[in-house]
Amino acid sequence: MTSRAGIRLFVDVDLAPGGEVAMGDTHTHYLRNVMRRAAGDEVCLFNGRDGEWQARIATLDKRGGSFALEAQTRAQEPEDGPWLLIAAIKRTRLELIVEKATELGAARICPVTTQRTNAERLNRDRLIAIATEAAEQSTRLTVPEVAPTAPLKDMLMDWPRGKEPGGRLLYLFDETGGGIPMAQAFAAHPKDQGAALLIGPEGGFDQSELDAMKILPFVNALDLGKRILRAETAALAALACYQAIAGA
Amino acid sequence: MTSRAGIRLFVDVDLAPGGEVAMGDTHTHYLRNVMRRAAGDEVCLFNGRDGEWQARIATLDKRGGSFALEAQTRAQEPEDGPWLLIAAIKRTRLELIVEKATELGAARICPVTTQRTNAERLNRDRLIAIATEAAEQSTRLTVPEVAPTAPLKDMLMDWPRGKEPGGRLLYLFDETGGGIPMAQAFAAHPKDQGAALLIGPEGGFDQSELDAMKILPFVNALDLGKRILRAETAALAALACYQAIAGA
Image 1 (cartoon, chains in turn cyan, blue):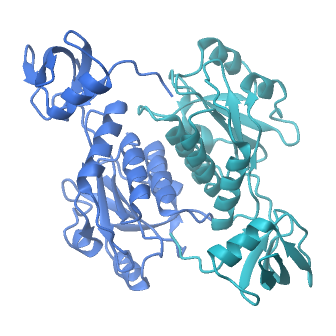
Image 2: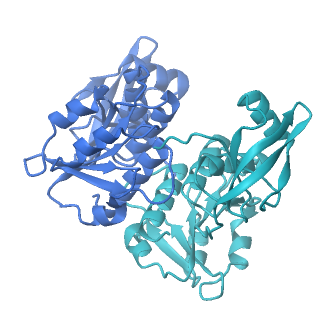
Image 3: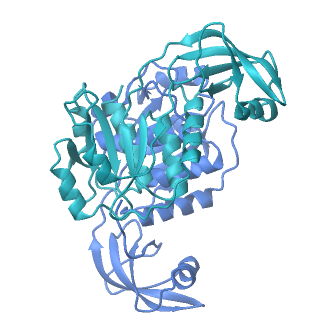
């Protein structure tokens, strides 16, 4: 949508005035060999806690490099977006979700297993790399957490309940129908609580899972509308609508 | 999200009680060699005008085949979803948009060129095949039209204006800011008019294009929110929100 001249990188070191910070191997390779940058060139850095900084490449050769920090260009802001709980699906579709959910402001992406999930083994490092790159290419100041795959029932046992500090309402997309329309539910979302969106597996939830979830006080069953959506489409539609209607 | 046993195919012949219809070469190959089906097996057919039909494979061999129609299972319904006008972008991203926009109920997908579009030559037949397959795998009764690539300014010249029969409001996603929030605009969408969603190129619209569009009576400039989204993410977010808030 917009042109973004310049390079924006996520780093895992502290960012403070006048600092010079070492460049990791990945950034050394990327800046030198992929982007053909050299000492003196400008970049933009963020670490998820100290805002966004204008910096310059101070040194760069094949053994490594460093950044010189010039000025903070944006203060850190909270980015407490919704969580996305997604039943494990095929690798390429999950990668697409991680990229798009990062752009759409998800704070945390949690692959979950359900009764009908055929859990493929996930390469979590690859998903984290995809989230990092998507955050760099957006205007985010944080990279969303990609949680390790966990059984859905374990997550529900330890859920941060509605009225507690950090409590979250869980929106369950129930493809068997009968939930309330998504737009209506999101318009009524209480401002002082977080949200999580749960998208089931391609084969649907088991009826016993649905029954068990619907009696939990922090669960709201929603209807996604008359269209049948693939899991990744449902995840992105839900996230986009939440952000447009209830999000910051 | 849901299991869909059975095969659902789009055909370009009339569907009527008691009919037997010839199978095209693509379906002959698909049913025989890919899905390993044989005479007597059930399929579901739709053609975009006669509803959805239960049918059986009547004959099938390497030279061709036919379907015997058994019963109409759904009457045809209007599927007058929004149009999606999207500045031509990279092939793989446009293919993703066509698949997802079909699931999300777009009635027509129009690749457009703008002042800052670097128009790659599109393989329209391939986009139509993707739309057809996505419609088959959803519950749609129509396949969205994939229009030939056209200059945006030509489309605006011939636009079906708001109050005319078949008139459509055009929602322009203006990444320079200043538009009204998407959720607010869609909530006020008049029920007797259609909608079209326009997503600009990666480099943004030229200011002169924005100025020219904003004075048109059928154009509403919208704000997509504080996040910077890639063109394909913006397109799917806009479509999902329109359908959830104003759609059928």
